[in-house]
Image (cartoon, rainbow, N blue to C red):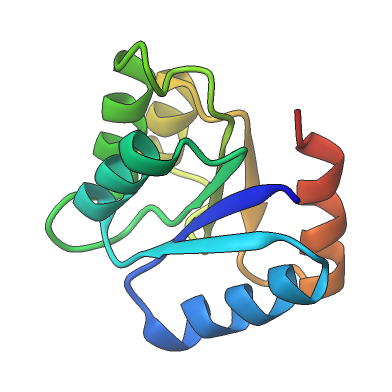
Length: 120
């Protein structure tokens, strides 16, 4: 069963993501900010990470860079899941190693399908 780490500072968004991915037979880990995401990635080495950009403590861009710079977690694919699909932060995060950007307006079923296609 594949494991996804969902990272978002909005509790409602995390609950919706958890429901969608568990329904698709995935194990779901959650983090409320980038710092928690880095710790979860190191501790559990998920198959894929779905990362928000704008979060407190550590934003998604900094978390992506930290995960990609760590040899123990560098191979984990990171997908940006954000309302800010354009702009410097999104481009910086893609340059830091994120593999794709998905808009937060993407319907849950389509999001699950996209993620499942990207699983290693």
